[in-house]
Length: 445
Image (cartoon, rainbow, N blue to C red; front, side, top):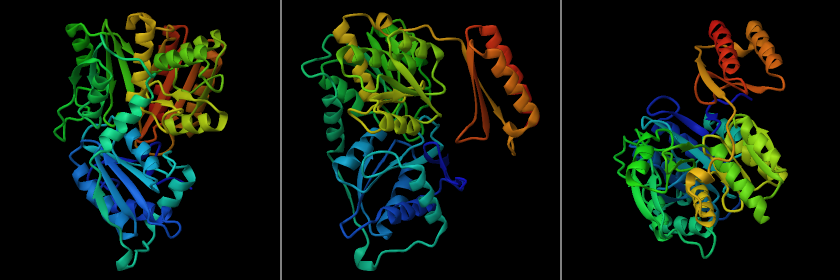
């Protein structure tokens, strides 16, 4: 069945367009609630959100939907996505919801769903909910409609859980850390957690106003972080995205460190300590070939999945890995969390910084990335990748790169884009291959 609403990470769209209205949010609440109302116990859903203005619209609409089918609602306010996953499980809820469009601009929003185990829903669950969205909802009798309440100590619960992942007895005293919260969901919890562990904090992106989430700050706009780290003489900078499930690091020289380098550090360190499970890590097809080569040099494996942290997690769970993630900074540490957690991953990096006694610039450069180029080609309709000329161009490129690089061509899960990624040892060859394929796709589109 073709998906109509769910993409690679929940339902997402521009606010007050058909996929992201108050009416749609209410329908999602009804459908997801109906799907997870099972048995006679009191059913409960945890709802969190980031700092987007439209959260004020979507949150009560979801409450209306869930309560109308008999679910009680627990509201936790602005909280990171991983916090919602954690609280869903710890509160024994039947479902968790995060209202967020992650790193997108404020005018977008989204609805992410978690099952009672704190994990993102399976494809089967999402398709079942889609069918229910289209159907006439079965509403609860008047005496069985749900109730809603707010939980005031949710932030403290999450901070405690995050700090519990940090090595016992270790402190961050003596470290100056710039933390950029993207004016998003972690604007309170991230600085507080780092301060409680003893660090000197320089906060950025901690004044949300409803429209400035991810605006010139956060993991997708690290320039201010880079400048602040250097100007303040900080030891390191951490950048989260709008819902704080993603992490990018800046070393003391202002150099950006992406998720591939961070995963390499965590995996190799955990391997030395006997903590790594699965003999390597799981990443997507977008992770750099340099990461794969570095892991192989240490006797570790890299298993690849299609793009999307949910697919990384599925492979981790199926094959017994406890470290995985994406180049973009979604890092999943399954010993501690059921989804990507930028703050938790940041604490693992900070632990290595303290224990090694090295500067961040020494610690965080584990391999030289292979030249990699990603370009997007927008199309208005149809399926450009099915065009015979596009297929032939891609086949020629694959033959040319054999043994010297990789090629990844995929449609975006959220926009009408074809993403063309090529990497290889020869930068000139990489650029030429990308241009050829993009030209063929553009012509077919």
